[in-house]
Length: 234
Length: 234
Image (cartoon, rainbow over all chains, first blue to last red; front, side, top):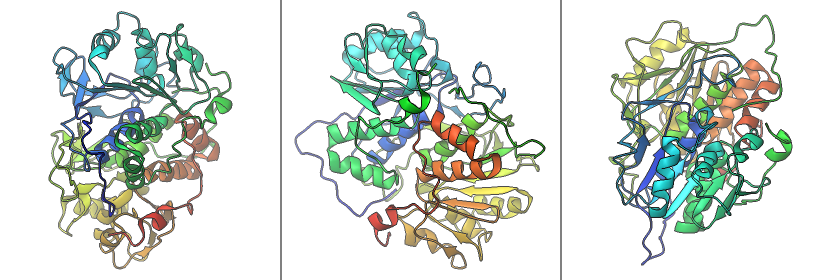
């Protein structure tokens, strides 16, 4: 929204300006729009290129989960978001890729188009950020092998089983290993994005973004109570 | 996402099932999708009707704020969401209306289509929930006159000046007065929605939704540090 403070981005550094996010049917709204809101506030302080929204086709992507076995009530409740690019048309110079989770990300196979895209694109990226069980897509792509990562706690077993060669960290709000940042469930996407902003744009910028969002950001990657709350997870 | 607990909604009660949200160019992403994510998790436990997304036309609504004077960097960074209804076609039996804020809600006049819609629709609603400076639209509609309400803290003066007959409460995460629930800025939309779910569906249900979101929900309407952080606001 606004601010009375002034942000000085460390001069001379070249910061990423090209951000993209993969969307798919059954994506979790807050997984996507918590991080995108933080980046959108950042974009009022630092010039960023238009957001790239990536999907299988250019048809609107619906978040609803009526088909999911977890949708016990069978409601068809969601919103449709318009992609800007397909997997084939994403610019080669994309710098930061976000991967949300949701009911539509529970059982990716190695031949999943999203997994293929991550595998093909990761070597060109500056950063990869996953939210909730979106990490399962990155794990299937093999880009997390030998790396530390975390995942949502409610379906911990199911998500982490997608990456047998990943060093999973259960008690974490988020984990950064090299240029891959992974987060715990849903709202933790806000925290990992703010943590990433602090790393790349400085703590003061991250704190201002959080204040605009009126979000009580802890800036503590190790803070997590949900592993305890959810126990072993499913 | 999922849960091992079982929710028993108080039997015999009739709970709202018809939810709508007003979107407009320059809406704040998290204002809208924090609450909608909470309702979407709720919808996997309690049968809700499909979400009604209301806008001026059926064209996708873009969240970007490139035209806002607050966008100091001038970035054009946002996402487009597809409306399901226009102001004219919203079903008469809509029960719960959400109104987000954002740069596009800063200066509504009394003749604003959104203000007119709120004024016309409010008497038929069971609940009205506003997020951030979305409360300014409700204030202009006069539905808050003589009622207690809160608003975002960063632009407190500007937003509250839209409702000279409202009893503004500054130190609050959210305020409920009658059937109108208003929240503080951006991420506070999560808290007011969870508070509203607790009121209508029970505390246990709200807590489960928060746990699925891995959101450390305080369930304390009076908790607020951002009035202090932002001082008098703009």
